[in-house]
Structure formats: structure tokens, C-alpha cells
Amino acid sequence: MKRENTGAPARTSIRLRTEEDLDACVRVLAAVHESDGYPVNWPDEPGGWLSQSSLLTAWVAERDGRVVGHVALSRDEPGDLAPGLWRARRDANAVTAVVSRLFVAPEARGNGIGALLLTRASQDAGRRGLHPVLDVVATDRAAAALYERQGWQRLATAEQRWSPDRTVTVHAYAAATSPAL
Image (cartoon, rainbow, N blue to C red; front, top):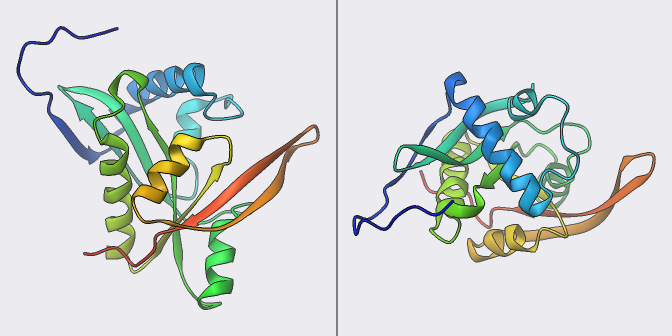
């Protein structure tokens, strides 16, 4: 669905996600899943998936008053690759925060929204004294390109078994430096 060009620039803002945003976030996530196959395994309860138990906080991107993107920051969970790799390379006691659930509506892409969301989550991690890391499915080349354009470093690539009949190749990334406060 294209919007009519009125000549006025579209306004994008990033703000904390509220419970009232979840339905809109699920609709955008469904469009992303249809377009790109993210998430790889569609969750039984998408709103719950966006509000995972390890969640520290989440943000939405709004463009002209509509939710068009999402990102979350969470504690690491079993199965996350990047946090352990970061600790192994830096310091066994290093504390990380996982950037997750990052997606932008297909019709809103190309406007820097993904970079804005990534920056917001990274800055919040830095304010908390945590180093931001993330895992991304290797087939999601657009996401990997975004992280690399933003200066993130690929730590490793590994195979992960996500179900008895599904193995997925995952890239682990870490922000190159601690985000500026």
C-alpha cells in the first residue's frame, strides 16, 4: 500500500514500546514474515514472542503516526551465540545485552529506520553498562549488511539446531565499540 506523496517529508520517531503497540507490531511482523521469512519460525503467540521473558526494554519506530518498526534489548538466553563469543574474546565477566526482534515494515524500508532502531538499542545498552551483541540468520543478508554498515563486527558463523528437523546458519555480531552515551 503506497501513500500519496503530499510533498511533506515523512516523520520518523523512535519511542519506547507500550502494551498498546503490540497489535500494530504483530501486524508489521506478519508483513515482514510474509515478505522475508522473519522470524524463521512463526511464533504461536507473536505478541508474547515480542515480549520475551528476558526483555529489558523495546522500542517502536513510528512514521507519520504509524508503527513501522521494532527493536528489543534483552538479557542473553541459552542458545544465543554472540554473548558467549564476546565474553570469550574480551573478558569472561563481560556483560552483554542482546539486540533482538529488529524489523521494519517492507513499505518503510530505505529510510534509515533500521539504523535508528539499532542505534537506540545500542545506546541504551551502553547506558546500562552492557555491550550490545546479536545473532542473525545468515540468509538475512539485508540485516547483516545493516549491522556491518553500522560498524558491527562479525564474531563467528555457526550452525544451530532450531528443531529436530531444522539446522540454521547464524552469524554472531558485536558492536565494534561501546556505544556513546
